[in-house]
Length: 362
Image 1 (cartoon, rainbow, N blue to C red):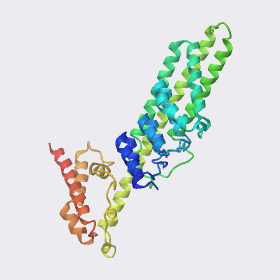
Image 2: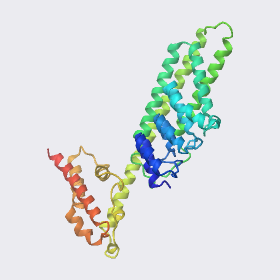
Image 3: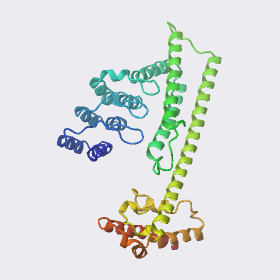
């Protein structure tokens, strides 16, 4: 369980607030910075490497950050740093990889779940440069640019947008189904193996004089590259479609839970209706979300282009969350310590619904 203090450390690392983090760790010298956060189970050191923040990385190392700690995919912080260096070049290597290697040299040979070590990744970078120097630059550059574009698009879309409506109560985890992380690890390993073999073949064939590839060999290379690109694109599209389906199932699950909660709380029998209600007992559409996110859950699945149907659903929600009507139904049952907070949230929710209804009239 991540403590309140550790959550604050995570927030400072995420924001890149070096001075705040430094002051906080100085104040809480016994605080353990080796904890995991989020679905990827990354540590603050992983996050600092992912963001390329060398100052925060060095500060965490100073306060006992464990370089060998792994995330859900078996990557250490050094894996993350090397991946960053593969894109950022020498500057990222000097800022991230060097201090981690110096702090924990043995981390270079620690494999992740796909069996790839940071040393393997660095060797891949070296072999890729060798292959690049020994083959036609235009072909290699085009392939590298396309792959980076695909991986950047996938990574940004997955980390920034997917999961906004995640709800584990309604979406059981299917351990057998390949998710984005599995797909990315597999593709990275296959691509590493392919480029490593290609670099070895080129090195072996160029002892002394450089041999030009025959037309048939060039055509075979182009065909293999085209097949790889097509497969990457096809699997990427399949992943996005699967992600969209899961997101829709999650939203439907939230809507279903909200409606069931309203029925149990607002339309309960007289015997059940005598129990006290705390803030968490109120069937909020999104308990930890904003008022706007609550409204999105309420109105999910309603076609906003069908104005009569949309207005009807909106009026129903307005009546349900009108402060006066809510008070008539529930005020006598509210826990005294949570009463004001509940009524304030109901008022904010009602105001947002009224604002949306007003916008339909203009």
